[in-house]
Length: 319
Image 1: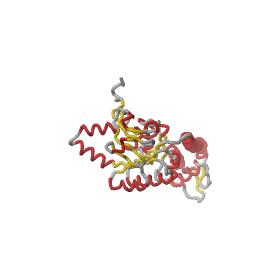
Image 2: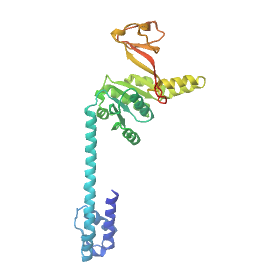
Image 3: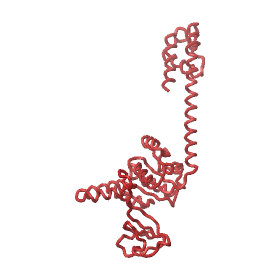
Image 4: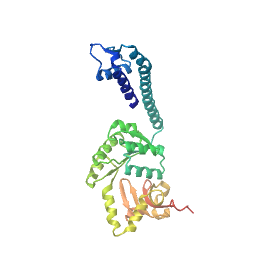
């Protein structure tokens, strides 16, 4: 674009400096405005002919300087058009390629601090980068996700067409992590409408908006400001407890919380499983039974137990 504008200015200056050799159809002298007009219509090959070279010197300048500038302008115009078309074709091809085998994937709506942390956790839980799609409309989020090797859909995650480009109908989970709570509500509503079976985990800043997210269809709602505040308050009196909690929510090393299903062969008294790690809770249907609930003593097929697990630290090689 800069070169093209420079060519127009270049031709206009040549015309204005040699204006005695040009004539205007209305018989008036060629001024600076006429020079830019002639440059524009000439270099774009429109050529109305109302301003034209008359003297031999002006025709020589047109032949030796203005015509090559016109050719260079056309080369830039065609090259830019081809580049844009090639880039769009490449983007469409890339999207079709990664979407062709996309099923059971995770969608991250918003690639800020929370979105990046969610991606790291998903990867520590067994996801690969090929099974994660990021939606973001901010340039910095799009660039960061692309640099991290993730498939990116540029756009507003509240829009139906954007979520469909990310394969919402075939997704297994959606992480809603925008900057605003009202945006989180709209994303959750739209995602739930498009895929009633998908697991939606949403983040909000204010605790008063939690019920809106749950009513919108979110399976889990994390209050970022309240959670941070509770940890800060707890750290003033029990800092080691906070260290353990941070360890628990950092997936992939140290202490982890895992969830697995009980099959028919394992059904029966909890003590018969001879688990190494303690059981924190049992999920039975839609109900969560804590470890001190008497119903936890007997497990049923289909129950899901939540237990602790110990993983090697990334700083210490496993023995």
